[in-house]
Amino acid sequence: FTFHDYLQSFKSYQPPLLKSLPKWLLYSFWSISAFFVMSVALILSTSFSQYQQTQFNEELKNNNNYIAYISDQYLMEHKVALNNLANQISNKSQSNSDSWQQILNSFHSLYSGFGTMFIASERGNIKVSSPMNMINKLGGDELSVKDRPYFIEAIEKEVIFISEVFVGRGFGSDPIVAISAPFYNESFSDKPIGIVEGSLNLGELVFFEQLGQNNKHIKTVVTDSANRIIYATTSLGLTKLSKFEYSDFPDSSITNLIQLNNENNGGLFVYQQAELNNSWKIYSLISHGVTLKVVEDLYLIMFITLFLILISVTIFAKKYAAHLSRPLSFVMEQLSKATKADDLKEIPYETPTEIDELYHE
Image (cartoon, rainbow, N blue to C red):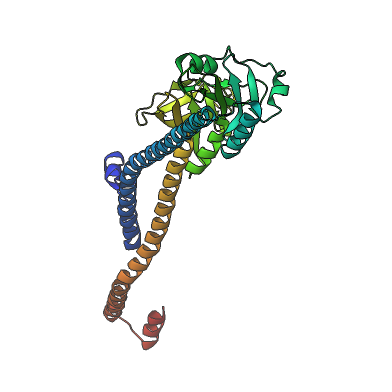
């Protein structure tokens, strides 16, 4: 469009058409405006894409940091609380089921993050539980947990133990983590006489995500040390305790782009990863479609702006051309009148009647 007339001089043997002043002004203004707007828009779009990617990465990083901090605090808070419960039971002068049940019920009401809690003897038999009907649901009064890692580690190593993620026996399908601590007799001189255990419900992580997620387009996935999914945003369609698998998607402009290996939602996502103190991993995801939507909106604004500018330039060029050509039209009209008068004087007229007829013509 800009070099059309120049190129036509090489291709055509016909003389170029002469443009009027309004057409020349319109042609010039359109060329300058289109070139200027497109140049600025392309420069801005390139810098905006880089800025947008930086902003998304910052959002993902902030979401990771928040979820990681809250999750670490969540685990630490319940770990310390269970240790205090074990110390409280050890300091009781009366070690009987009634006093244990009262303490356990009172403690469980303060820490609702524990789905279930129980106190087991040194042989692994559950003595009291909260809720109280847990023993009956799980198989009677002599229910044993001596084969469970959280019992073995707490009794043999005499430490507070946090288990791997697993699904409990008959109390929902949410992944849980068992936290156990040994307790002793009043003198603390002998081996542990039992353990206290609390099953921490990891479904509560959805509450933390809702607190930390200011933007609805951020999705969260939490995996354990074995890369099994502990928690995932519902819209992702991922199965809990399944392997979290994804493939790196090569892209020259986006380094952290992945594709989920999932039949329900195998789309592309921009992600950031963080790791907790206990080797759990947190993945914050933003759908690649969201990032593309922002770029599409930018280009839409660019084209609308260009369209409005070209319309404005068209109106301005016509008005400006009319303003410039008005004095020239007046001068040409006066010259035309003067030329016509001179021509009439040079014509030999025989009678006044012929002169009048020619003048009227």
